Length: 124
Image (cartoon, rainbow, N blue to C red; front, side, top):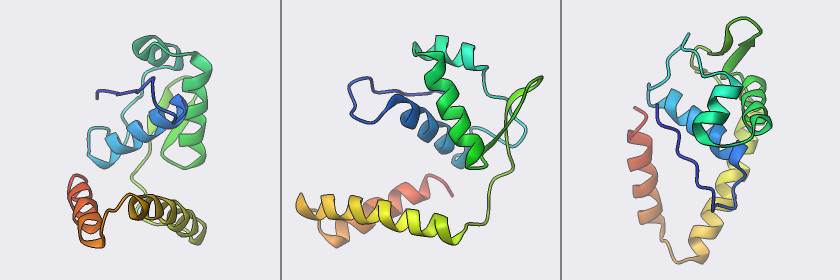
């Protein structure tokens, strides 16, 4: 799996890394039981600080996407097919911001929904 980090982005690198891994899981590039590179190896491969990778891995662990084992490292968990009320509230908040920004930039509902549908197809 290729990890793409935009060092010019305002989005923190650990958030970009977390998002890339989640997208890899959703696309089937990373499957249940697959190992992620060690924190040190991932940091070297991408050219970032080990603490940044560690922060992304810990966030993925908290969110249930990976398990961290001292001997085996970071392992991809079974894909989560359920969601909590808290997750739905967070999703709604994130979408509220994204839709508001799109609206302010002149993106109409039809285009927004078309883009959303095309992206969703990448994961099914």
